[in-house]
Amino acid sequence: MSSPQEDTIAAIATPYGEGGIGIVRISGPQALQIAQKVFRPRRPPYELTSHQVRYGDVIDPSTGEVIDEALLTYMKAPRTYTREDVVEISCHGGYLVLERVLEVVLREGARGAGPGEFTRRAFLSGRIDLAQAEAVLEIVQAKTREGLRLAHEQLRGRLSREVEALRREVVEILVPIEAYIDFPEEDIEPPPQEGVREGIERVIGRVRELISGYEEGEIWRGGVKVVIVGKPNVGKSSLLNRLLERRRAIVTPIPGTTTDVIEETVVLEGVPLRIADMAGLGRARGPIEEEGVRLAEEKLREAHLVLLMVDRSAPLEEEDREIFRLLREEGKSSLLVLNKADLPPAISPSEVREEAGVEDLFVISALRGEGIEELKRGMVRAIKERHLKRGEGELVPVNLRHRRILEELEGVLQGLREGLDRGIPWDIVAIELRRGLSLLGEIVGETTPEEVLDMIFSRFCIGK
Image (cartoon, rainbow, N blue to C red; front, top):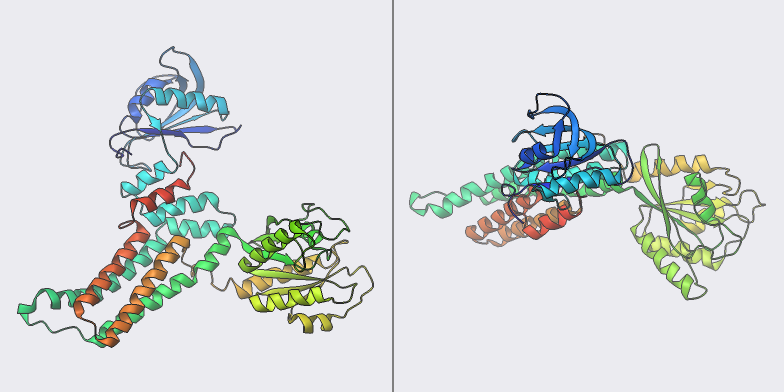
């Protein structure tokens, strides 16, 4: 790929489809020149002034044909998103109109932008660091207000400031060690080992705090993973439909109707839940159900919260008890749901509590909708108590890439702490501390390998 200074890129920056407004974005050294060729203001002055919106027509320079009326905004570098000259053409949001506008822009010297290339140029120009660039995608994909707030925190540099604070602490540990190694003729005393150890302990503690926030951040980004578990025909699909307040899963009296995983998202009291209805756990009745059970067990392992469903109108069976044992082995946070309250009971709540080993119990009728609101409140309460423990402003946004780097950093520092106890040479201590600094640089993009950058920006849409 050419450097940002050598070429000009363009793309449709709004979603494909019909809409009131569509935007074609241009960035690079030829942006103004291309705009002057394809845009004709309706009235003078005809020159384009930076950071002013002009009304006119987009034309095909080769024929003079008017493609669409539009608003054009020219923004001169460096006061732009990419720190290059940027032009945005706002026209009608039809697919054909946008394609025609982009076609003439490309013909006049721009090339089509790759996924995330505008944001990548903002990163390469130093306008934002890599963690902030990732926040742009988080903002676009946010599913809840809290998830959006966390993404904005990251874009404003919350994580970057934490990383910079960690780097300063590591540098403070490293400087006296480097001085002792590099200037032996100055008779500099080696730093006190206990002081170095205490400094490393402080950094490890802060790194662990950042890592611990990953799961909570993922919940706000992608939702709490909730699975509905139980033997076939206990009413799992009916419960899913009630929680979603619409019919999503097929419900029949035939056991084993659900053979695949059905997953939908619902927001309760501001908390996003990804609820999965699955094949009944337990004995499979053929190869299709066997695959369904395998997928169900996989989803169970990933779950934050389990809704354990039992048919209240029938005695407990060995199949129920097998599921109880499986959940105890997995150690999952669970709510016990006794369904079919519209039928005469065959088991008591205390009996099921004792056998399942789950204290929180809700009696419902998925058929009639009885007890559903109470169950919803119980789900939100359990999630907040068990998974969302930090107050607003306490959580530092950490994604999976950041977590993996921080875990590697923790391993380096733990190894260094143990090495100090064994009396490893100071030059090895310095090497490992510099390695830690390099890892922190990967989070903000200072030492990130090119292939990792390619992977990150490939997740963006074209035009962002």
